[in-house]
Length: 283
Image 1 (tube, rainbow, N blue to C red):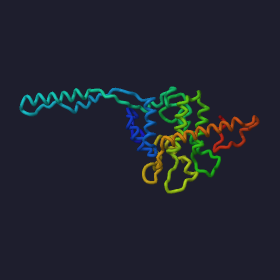
Image 2: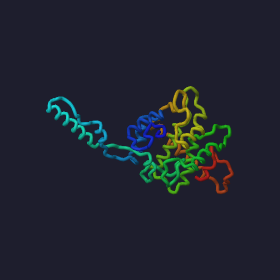
Image 3: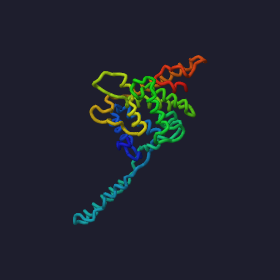
Image 4: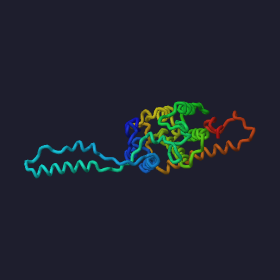
């Protein structure tokens, strides 16, 4: 959103309500309560409160040099102008967020290891090229060649599982909830949407070009706006977002249980019952 100018392009001093408005406007499908929750968690963990004094505005309030002829009127105008200047220095409490602060690490921060395209441990404000390459390669490496290139929700769940296993330390319960929500919400927002055709398997796959532009280039996919564009058309609320996060958790749990139940003679060359095979070997 910063790259497109819907919030500060510098990514600094983003205000709480401006972020909520941008989330609802840009992603369309995100309901106001869900946008409020997303913004609130970000601001609560990474925002800052500061006193702001619009003193610079007082430059636009000069003391008049001319006016009514009576000295009493002149004195009154001078007094009013000075009062306006004094009031302009009155501090206002402001809650803002710098996007760079979202990369801060800690048990109570929303940044976590096992991110799909950001490195573990190190603060990161842009995607890691190596992880993006692997991420997109996973969308291309198809078990079913006839299927559209891209990722389903199950694929994203497996990717998150493989990244979590490679992380240096387990995620906290709070961060695990954040990670599952990210996976589910990304799928809800980026998958194809249409009101004029029946639901099909293809609508459950985020196309490769969308993944590249949104995750790799940090911009809205081509054709996002306008009638028939790729912008979501069905609103996603809190319950739907939570349901998809639980779907991701269930996929990861079922896959891990399947792998743990394999006989000791199992060979990695045997097929794995999933749309991708490699990440499950790490579970």
